[in-house]
Image (tube, rainbow, N blue to C red; front, side, top):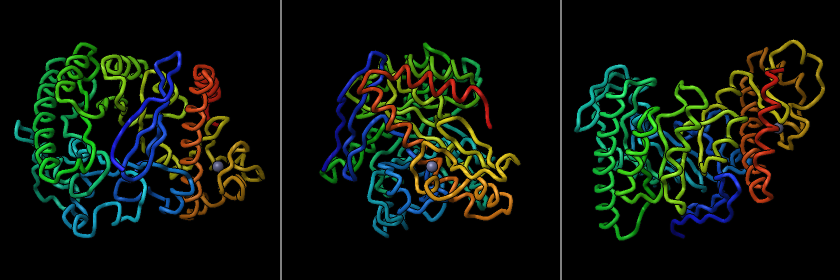
Length: 378
Ligand SMILES: [Zn+2]
């Protein structure tokens, strides 16, 4: 099975329901990708992820390159075999982590030189190297190296980063296509990343330049990094208006449960975020009625499930009182159960969004969820 994407249905917003086919299964879009940083989604086994219905997960190139190393993973049969995961995997380019985790880094046109946050060792990540690492990992979808900048950024800084991002994308594309030609089959899909900070004209310029490189899919990067939510939405919209309708669009690093449908309504097909897993470890549970901060004393005797509308194995079996006790006692099971539920909640939202697109009521669904979350945590 090779790669393809087809749009099955449009909605009166810009939302689309689609089907992304990879050698590791078919992905119904819009899709949410749980984050499996170091070849594991924290708190979940691969059995649990399969039970939850995760059709694609994200893994971090930066972390896997530093530990255990992409050559070791290649030797052991690639990331799917190494972590025993049969469904699809998207890897990021490592750029975001280099810019956010590494204290010592020096950027040049060649690439970005950085020291490992683990042991201080020096490394050079170039567009070619990021592509090479992801080919070794054997992910289904690979991202090009881009320059990530702090937001809010002055216009000249954003413009310079955009220029470099395009140049790096060109080099990454060339490297990737050469490798694909040598091996005879496209080993993975490579996506470009639109940058341009919070400047609509720069976002458009970035998108136009990347379109010339003819990527099979496009991501919108550098958003949801501290700018107001309305700005994130505006920038996503500005970009998706220019992107080809027959290719997947991926908004990186989003979002909150009540925001997801809004991104979909702006034409986004794929998303990833650490929120459901990270919040779970901090005792924050997402439910159909809003956020539940389970450590709160009001749950001491609460015999209800986390979410009465959720059919996950945790909600079927355990009470809020028990979850609260596990968190209070610092038991690792607390994080495991909470993560299980939160990931299921996100995947359920995506299922409901796909259904809402089919029946043409996405806007209603989005506003109802926003209203429930506006009330604040309970
Ligand atoms: Zn549940």
